[in-house]
Image (cartoon, rainbow, N blue to C red; front, top):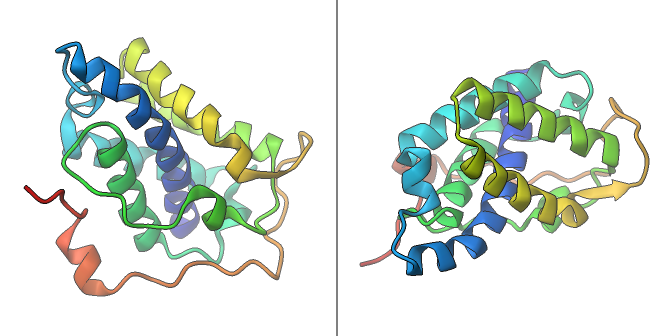
Length: 182
């Protein structure tokens, strides 16, 4: 269950941050803090991802989709992507959302349940509406790369032909997110 929760959390936050990064460029050029800074930096991102993962793991509407996923890889990739996408010092080095979710047969209902879990995690940490909306807007943009099955069904099993990504080497996860070169 812990593995499932981490996977789902990572999926949501990865998607949200990828879209947020594109929008963030214009905000930074206006002289405002990056979304990464407004969220509280790497430690805050890790905390939200941890809470989100806990919620997803316990959520029977979606946790079956992640029974084959390596939780360490998922968490690492999610932190890396959120950090990079929000203007932080990280570089995203993991699979695209489309590749990560190919053949998972995620439904629209499962995607929506995941978003609900993300909102609850953001609310727990009192993330302001502006930042929350940026993240949710980014996630909405990734829906087409994640959802493969129309409809409101939830709790559907992971298809047997789904092939998860291999676990990351211990050295990569121990080092934390990849950093931009100066």
